Image (cartoon, rainbow, N blue to C red; front, top):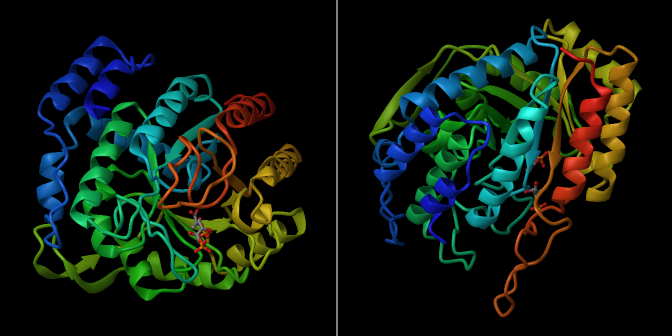
Length: 374
Ligand SMILES: O=C[C@H](O)[C@H](O)COP(=O)(O)O
Ligand SMILES: C=C(OP(=O)(O)O)C(=O)O
């Protein structure tokens, strides 16, 4: 399916005629994605030029980042809701999901800030498919130039739907290809303790959520926050692709994300109180996000609604600590394995199990009813 046409035909209901004209003008200049081309990668600047952030998107991104930062700091009472697929493997399916979410979003905007997960890199516990950027054809061929191109193109198209985007920043090099399109960034449980990721986070323009470690350890995420709030100096590649020493100012918008650990949840009232005290003790803002998936759901997507209900209960008792939630959701519920001889089921995750669109719509509408008006 022609993706440019898909966006054009989507009829973004919440946008005016002027905004649509800007989108059409941008899409006119988009060429079809480059084809697999071996191990030469374009530079981040080349790809940014190919799929640019125009003036319309720049304003939208700035507004979304400001709103998210305000929520993180407690200056906006709305709930931050990061929702979307565990991973992107099929850009058509993810665009369809994005169109549905973009249609729902305006009805929720006054009580929550919706941000869509566009996770194009996946961390693995040992080995496995590492995401669209690394292996876009899902067959171990690792056409990374094609993967980067597809990922950036998808993010531009989703952003044009009016959706702020979230991603996990995994490779500090890949981050430069995509970060200008991202409004909320995760540093995952497997990399929270890594100095490279803390350095990267210290220079990102988006708010950054540090997950607690896979063993449930929250201390590493608190240390990561302390590190990333400080300036850093580190070697990397420039956006032109040359080795560069990068100096960062420190990121004041870092925060904690509770995702459970070793099969045990950590979103209960006692845990939230304990981690709030730890944040306070370290002089950090007492604001955190609860990831309803991963070990908080005991890795069963059917438990995400239970986690969300408990978060709502805590919010209703007046807790000002929880400022956001994360849900793993896609078009169809569950997940599937990639098999070379079997076609994939459309709209089903190939990484962690997700709740389906029907449940997502229901949960978000119920959540809206239970949240106080702004
Ligand atoms: O979020 C997805 C997964 O939990 C994460 O990528 C780790 O997956 P794995 O344990 O299957 O490698
Ligand atoms: C991999 C993820 O989370 P975690 O780092 O908590 O496992 C994710 O959110 O996709």
